[in-house]
Length: 114
Figure 1 (tube, rainbow, N blue to C red):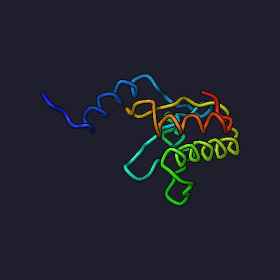
Figure 2: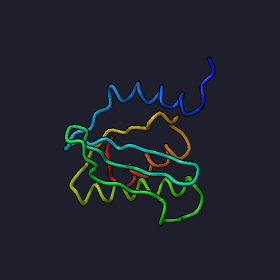
Figure 3: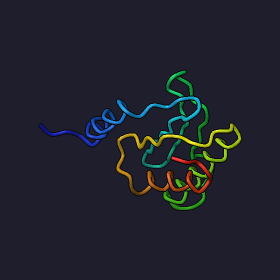
Figure 4: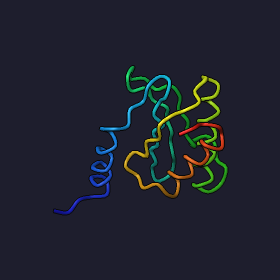
């Protein structure tokens, strides 16, 4: 059986959905990347609400990885304003390298702990 990249990512994603849960005190930092842009959200799964979000649509720093790191810093800054210090990282089925890793590193540099 052959599968597309999207189906393979969804299979990997389902494994983490079972275990990674966000709360109001420790929300889930979810990353989504498209071909052009990258998005990050802090999600409270218990209430079903998005607490904060950031994307690189309006901010252009340079290359995609640089934009991803800037998004990590931005989401960490927003989290600090909302008094959120820790979170759980949800790579959303993507491998932990490249832009996904850059978002995580940027969030850590901004002060988020996970």
